[in-house]
Length: 564
Image (cartoon, rainbow, N blue to C red; front, side, top):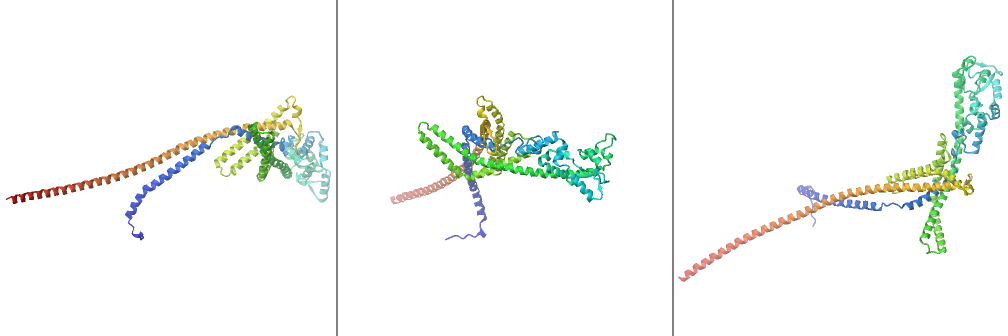
């Protein structure tokens, strides 16, 4: 029969007693659970310590060198042509005669001839059409306007040969500007120079005096005879003239900026797209080349290990089966390879833009262009590692891997600078010069010499070996640091375990003491009870003896009585 508990009339003293009893029990449970967790943590630390082993340097060298030679620091650079100044001619480079295309070089030759005295300025001005529309514009203005106002003085002019149309920004200044020659054709420059915004009616003498000078320079120039400024001599309103000059320059700057944006945009898209397509194609080719090369190395290693145990037919079949298996694996990864190709192409496009931006301010040499492109690849990979680390990788590990990628990129980029020296060394070896100078055609590029290809491969090999060694010791240092931290954690965890073990031991001792105390008290009670029983039995025995003695005395007295 179940017992019904009245919760409204519970004995609170009994509850408090239960709570007191439960406190040691809760503490015991907590200590046991914490000890179990500490032991598990210690086991985990030991496993981490034992599993932290270095990869062999030779194995790392094999993999990294193959990766470097077939990657962006090696043969990949052969597929994207590097030029001094990059793939897009900037105004900064054009002025120095560094051009990325034949058409830009032709523009530079014309620009140079037009400004170094090779051609007469009158011929340049006539051939480019700087004056061609002016006579008709004068006639039209004379017919349509009642009064011709001097743009620099505000005074009326006569409709005759003394009234000229002046190029506010002179034709000479426009023609001698490198940027305008790069971005515009002669026809476009002439059209801009003869636009109404850049033309002003003025007195013929003032126009001839101004000539090729800028407005500000001419207004402040002193006349040799009168020692007046030109503004004073010709009655020029300087504010009015400078306002006209400012409007013309804004117009010319706008036209130049639009032309520059159009040319830069078109060429960046074209050259960047070509680089992206080439790098995407090579990326897929590089994966196949790398995988097959590694498979061949594996088969060669097996052949050397099994030397004398296999026939030539066995070796051939093993090579054939191994390569076929690797090709099937590569084909099965087509989505991954395609994704990697797209990423490589995008990176190549980005690197082309970066090189272009740098060349807006400074000229990069051919090798520097290659180094920048390779560095951009490494930087992109590092950013990708930080932004989206592989599943299961901690933030700390992703940061370390990003540092390794950047380090490898820097070493690889610097190793590219060795290729020029190696190429010259190869070409200087007696007897090998004809072979080294032999041209190898490359699609869409100028032919490359054998020495160039070998130099790139050797520099990539050196970079790969150096990268491997540096990364190996980086891993070693990090591993040793990690081991030290793990050992410190093990020591700390051991202290925690000892503390919990001591607490557990004290609890066991407390239990033993309590049990001994209770047993002793029970035994003392048992002895005391036995003693009381003995004393009681003694009393009863004494009483019995006394009764026996009394009975004995009675019998004795009765026997005496019968005797008489």
